[in-house]
Length: 182
Image: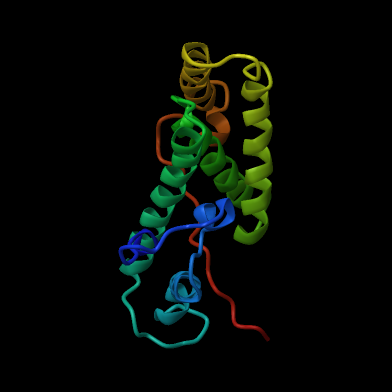
């Protein structure tokens, strides 16, 4: 964003400079500082691990939703923006990750931090099921393969896996809590 706005006459002289995520030390410090601030938001609420109530708890839900959408959009940006490939099944793979992490926490007793990488592995496995047959296709045919995933995955989550996913009804998951170390 602001890294692309530079004074007139300042040009990149190498490919490494052109593709660098952090062009200056200030960019790097600002980005990492914002990520650290986002990670500290849950700790600054009444139920946070620090016992300080500086922020309302409703802010956590807003930040989580925004973060989820940012992750989804960045994944789609990498796929469509950098590679030029069109994915019509992006939301279905997000659903696999969301449902698998919720089911692991609710039914199998995983903590949030262990369910997160496990859900990523499960989603990667489902992605492989659709991705391996799609390796040799491109353009319109790749769009159709991802469109197939967009229809197959939600149907699979709604009907055969209804005992786990609650079908089209909301899935109740316990709110993660921060425990004080004892």
